[in-house]
Length: 276
Ligand code: KMH
Ligand code: ZN
Image (cartoon, rainbow, N blue to C red; front, side, top):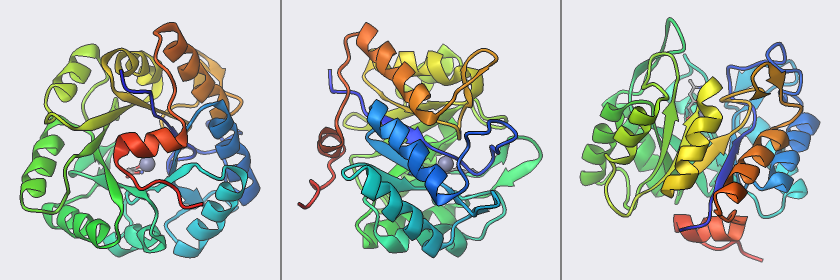
């Protein structure tokens, strides 16, 4: 089986220090958290950024400062900025980090109720616009799907040339408003993508580790981190993102799945090798 790519979603836009004091806001905190995940075995950092006061932003300059600082501490890690940002941001606001030409970025594949009464808006024209920009900028999208319908949407737009094959998917499961996080939900999504695809699974809250185990067993990849879940086990807050990644590494060891280095992750995902 292919080696396991572990992505760390280091902060997200929704969780705060009130949920877990280790959620990063400052540049130094981002470096501390990303480094802990990288050293534990993560090869991709999925990045939302915040200002020092905790306010989420898609500001290009803030992304650059934090990306440069993470690269200094984790030289070969793949940095995958979010283009989802936070609910309510405009399309062009959300797209700003793609101007920094990262290797990857997320591409959200549909509109949904998000977490409660919010609407996370990704109309067909928005997805086309984001897909086109990523092609122009040479960025590999991680196609985030929060439900089965978003797979269909993405495949339809891929046929029209807005997303290139092979597609790399992220099944975000267990968000209030999206698909659940049960095994049958995982089987449904994993059975609905075309051959040649790669996928990672992001289980939210209590679904994080059961779904990580499913992905490890079935040849998928895994995303963990504070964006999705702040607990190491029931009622026990994780002290760092690294602790969450280390738990995935332990699970992978139990099931005999080796962990991909960043260079191996680039190869699996069809990204260009890092220039020396
Ligand atoms: N913060 C969510 C509204 C992404 O990173 O692309 C959207 C999100 C998706 O987190
Ligand atoms: Zn995200």
